[in-house]
Image (tube, rainbow, N blue to C red; front, side, top):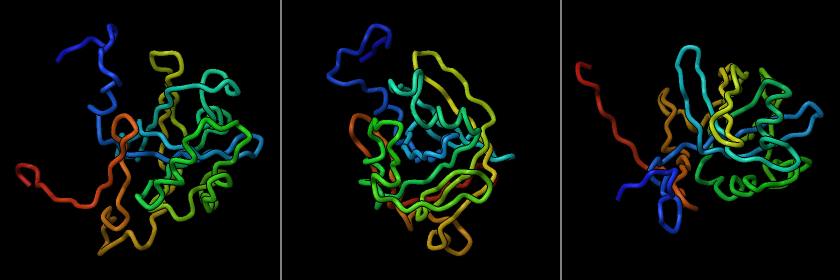
Length: 201
């Protein structure tokens, strides 16, 4: 099969997200300039640089009460900071609860019964028991092609690692089983790993 996205795919559902998978999930927590808090998952998320450490996530839809974007990007525009919380398999249901298109007044921490903790470097809450949380200061927000597509880049200025995820000095993903996003309504979970040495190493 071959298709041009501009012409449509002719399938029951768009295969694009299923092709580019699995994808890590960035559970983004933000605080608005009015003090309100938001927590939402984004699967267009990844690390993009080592020194200084940087991450990005993309928001691809809008809400009527936020104009051209959603709560996360709107809050980040106001404050310049955000926190990425890593999602473990055990948190799949509460993470999913925070994915709804709730009114901007909704505090997803409270709505989903998620314990919060203060960040150390930025004015924002984080998911208290997440395997890891990355406190970020925005470096740039890029408007992408499309009506409501924005890519947010941030420098990681603080890192929280849950103690039980550190094994012999290694942050071991098998201790918490990362949740990953596939296409459609599908997810997967990482339960095993293996190593490969690069040529010459």
